Length: 173
Image (cartoon, rainbow, N blue to C red; front, side):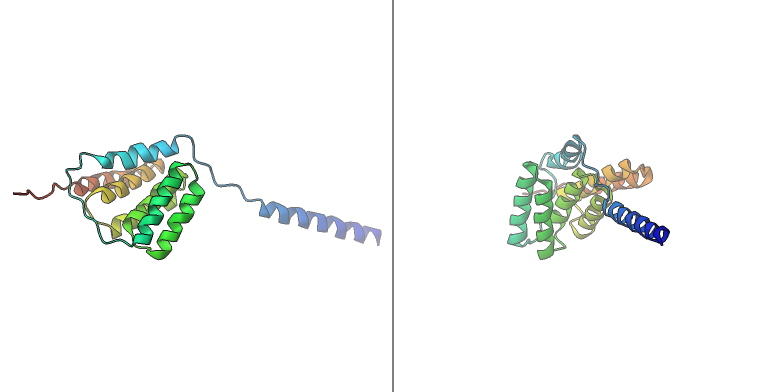
């Protein structure tokens, strides 16, 4: 009888330990100190360019624009979680806004979430204008993601498409 109680007691202890171990999922990797600089230097800054390229802007929801601006300010202050929450709210309002999708892609890249960054950047590219800053930033994000994943062929394809985003505006007389 004592033997049976000991077995049941040991089994219960093992079960509790296993359940607690299952709850302890590893934390997602925190972005390295250079992650924010990569987004700024390789994705956003080159798009600023000379301003002499054709830009296409669609009509945007004012609430989405305001949430995007607030998310950018919060991100610059270093609160990436709040920035992500604000962008998620914006996407619930308009899930097809290429600028918000790209902003979310860049945030995910800064957080080291490469699969999510690629998904948002691809959607931004597909839904957005095929010329201008958003097009360039989407493809640059994809290039960085593919390079980090050692997917050299996909990175080369994205780099080849990048030139198509740069279109000179029509001449004005």
